[in-house]
Image 1 (cartoon, rainbow, N blue to C red):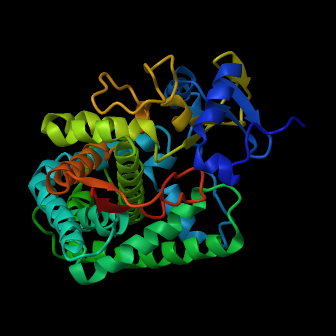
Image 2 (cartoon, rainbow, N blue to C red):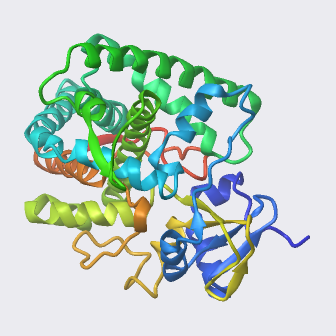
Length: 405
């Protein structure tokens, strides 16, 4: 058996995987990782191909023994992210129809106001003499949870539960997870499913205006000449996916991206001085230090990817972090450029699984960055942050900010 191209649990690799990715790209676009049991695409072109090739699918099977992890497997099985046509086509059409009722634009001013209030609270603490404040705890973590909770109509008194549920469940997608954290993920999934069953039952009994759960419950679409609706489990799976994908992505893009900006004062100054640079800076934050590093697919038949044959039933993953640093797709890819355009990053995926929540995530990220540049233009890093020791979902434990001088 050949040596693995990297150890996904090595702290040095997790601190900065990009030199390793560059070395792999120099050797070829596809590599086999015996420890992970799958092929890895590392070039932008190969990753884009993996994400778009319909011979490479998100093939459902229980991620863990069904009798031990029934709630997690229910969420996994009913997720748009984990399905292929025709199931995926049906689910995406129904969910997109519910989203298409103007929820993102309706919430844009509310999100801007929320970001302003959260950043104002951070600034007030600095004004009151705190030497530094954690951006993740003060802004990045509460922002997406409050947005998803508002979108789903979760009562204010219940929202404290959402973040720990999401944090526990999403760990199940890491490699080499220990039994204790697998059990914690199942316990969180069980609690979340139970909570959402009650929430969905309430919306069926008493529909609400401007409420996504109401729209998901009521969504209908013509599929092959027949009317179709989401099942209760599918509504629940969609709600959990919105929380997990929206929460984890937004928290980690803010953390990774603001760290990158403040580590390069000239780039931060560009954003501070020009509000029009905020959208392009957000796209660079998404590209430069990707919050989702890996996305798996399974070959439904023998298929060639970038010159390598992936046999039916074998797995291949797009290493999105490697793709987003490919010099064949980006000029000076290891440099953070807040004005980079065009920016063909793969942070939201590609093909039929392109992130349905990307417009909402962009609204959140732009609101957070714009408010931070306005209210704390003299921000700087108080100390180097600690990196989370996880590979698939890349993020920080904290990001302590202070003021210049």
